[in-house]
Length: 128
Image (tube, rainbow, N blue to C red):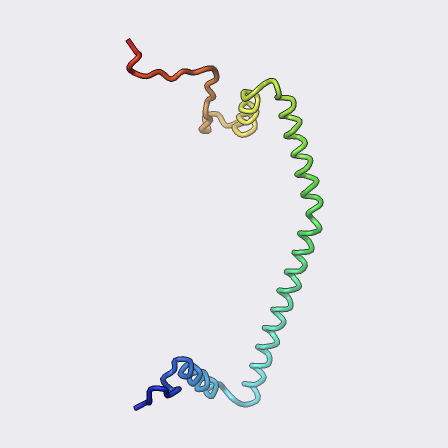
């Protein structure tokens, strides 16, 4: 029926023919063209609005960067001050502070108790 190199056997050619057939079935007349123009205008308007909103939020983010940087800098200074105050206290102060801030007012909320001290692991063979 078709020759080996016939373009009608090509999938892209067949898809183009289907598009052409659908385009020919589209409603013609003054309203069909008007609908097409209005659809393209609406699509273009949505693209413009989306671009403007994207640029607005980008500029808003850039404007907020100094404020966020300032807050993070203050928080870092606070953490450094706590660590400097805790220089001699070791691990206990940080763990107590963590428990107080994260488990405040929630008794029995899954708080893990801290066991402090020196521990030695013994083998079962050494036990009498």
